[in-house]
Length: 500
Image (tube, rainbow, N blue to C red; front, top):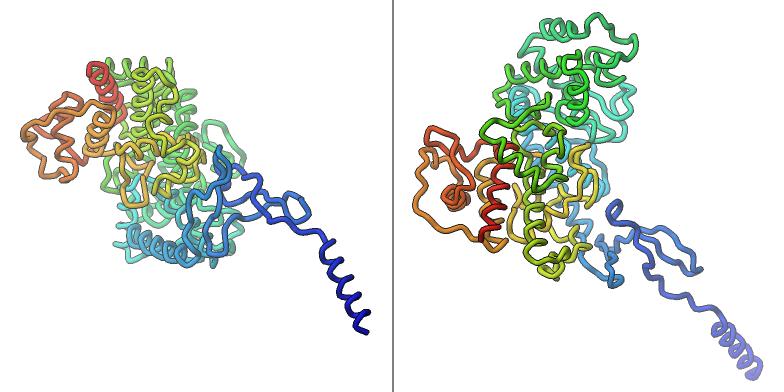
């Protein structure tokens, strides 16, 4: 009996030893993190490649690929921490924009990203206009509800809807928020502030006899969808005014007096009449020319940076309008182009960044900044205009040149203020080895409006001749800094660096 038992145990042991040992499953190929940073291909026990989430059991991302191989480069917060961040973000958005947010979902990561996406889309509408519209809504005793559920109200809408009876925007895709907000402005606010009948009569007069529902007429309607009804025509125009400026300028160049462009000009006039905002918040609908005092500086900038997205190259018109307020994204990108050109010339090394900042390799830039609204790297952050890589902005952050508008946001679509521009230009000169000399007290009469963190920089850049006042002894620190002013001062900074 004992011999048979021993023989049986030996047989079992041999079978166990003969069984194949499953190899430890390790990540083998990372999916391009530019598009999806939390998916990877791994080989399973059978040696087959399969897509898997690379979020660990604690909710953190374990690995991202670098040229040196697989390295643990950063940790995402745990599911509990993400839930706390989402809760804090929702509270801030509701407080900041005077709205209610519902239906973001149950999974913390999903909730957080949907809220962050909503924040980015709201930022496409100029902040002064959004704030003024929300204040008008509050004065009417109403609060906007943004419903982020996949299940929209029963309106047959595929991507978004607006219900004026409950002041509720339903969003299946956050990207259509601007269109739906156009409905809110139109149906809930302008009907009272401007007059519904007056607005409809003046608006439809631009159609030149074209009737809604009869089909798309090029030049009369911006899109096919706009031709379906007066309400959709208004909402599409509102959306295009902020979200598709390239398409608008292309149409304006082709036919500057077509009905669709006339409607956009009319829409701007109505918004300016009904809300306490400045015209500088709008992009220029029509191609513009630089002011006389700025022509030489703009020409010099285009000579230095002919391929810059900041200003169009060659004979093409300046993209958003020379007199428009510059977006923070554009100003920062222009600053990095300047820094890159100067360092390439100074060092003779196209790879100067790797040599100067070995701890900040380019493949890791996406995780070396705190700005949630600059993610995903290489992603289409904003329709058409903001589709470039944020790498230049992240590099400026590593250089100590730029900061955000809050601990976690860069606000790329916001118009840069004059004091913000002064701080960036001052820090840029310092970072590139050309510190500006200290001077006495600034003599502008409105410096009590200047933030304490900007006083030194305003003093330095004006003393160095990089920036100047706006006339009447004023600097206007909180005013917007225009594209032509930006180009002129970038050219001045480059000249100063060349002389140093």
